[in-house]
Length: 451
Image (cartoon, rainbow, N blue to C red):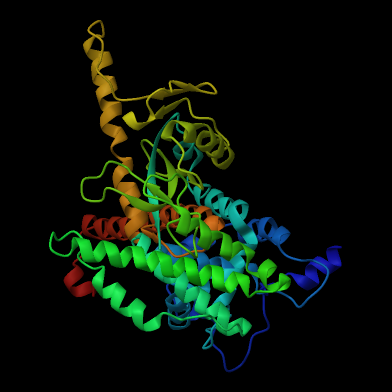
């Protein structure tokens, strides 16, 4: 088995044979660059061992080296790049190539862009959590094993259009036409010309003068969608019905749902998307999944990140979130500070849950000040969520299905921690240079003539 594992898992040579006409990367990059320092802090061998269990070990060709593809995934999250742009920048940037374990400068893409999709599907939620744990372990134990953590939930929006019944019904008609063309089924009627005019008529339905006509057009579109679905299902044979059973079920569910229906479908290609209301004035409803973030109070490190497939109550997310925090850090926090959305939870498996509330009159000044500092510190998780959304690709989730929701949240948190460590390493290098210059001045050197 060990021999097969060595053959099937792609490796990067640690000491490759020197070539006469190639210059090693180390010869023209700065060794004190923050990415070079970060690559030295990451235990790549341990990461390869943890992720190698997700690869087949007995057949097929050798895979892309784990350090290469894992390094590209991390760089993508650190610098907020897409699957396409991260590889283009990788070819241009020698520091990125060094971070991914390359010895010589490469002029070609390290792998195809679809390999990133396969890698994310391969490692799934558990592998992504291992990447998060790796990013947390870069920091000192004193910082990651704090007794107090800040916890909050947010909505990770899916990459779908704003759902309306007319939009969904029009998409059903279009998908039925494509199925008919693919399976060579002759529809009774295509409704192309009529549907085009109906889509124009149903616009501006809130205007008093257009309301009657717009509602009539919307009803007609729904009738046409039902006719097309029944027509194509009637003309399918047994094998075709089994092939498209899942799609037809979604089509029928969309056509049957009303405004007051529960468990509604908001997207044809992503039917698991939920409608979540977080009480925002500017954005009353968001369509995606709920995610939970846990951050240390003093050091500001993300020690927990979870995605949920259901629209669960915030208080019910505390137990799995605290369990994940203990898995990632190896330490069980004593206190969790949350907002009023978690009302009703005071103790979770021995962890005290603190919610901002009115202080009792019997409390002394010290106790009041201590609680106020905790409540003010709780707001510190809000900008962290903002950075996750704006800088680490959590604002709009482009990954598919429920697994994509979970993986995107974990990788965004990993990118946040690595970016934090990068900034810390850069600050340390600048501090060293500042101390060196200060010593030169202290010795009385005349820098004007020295340089």
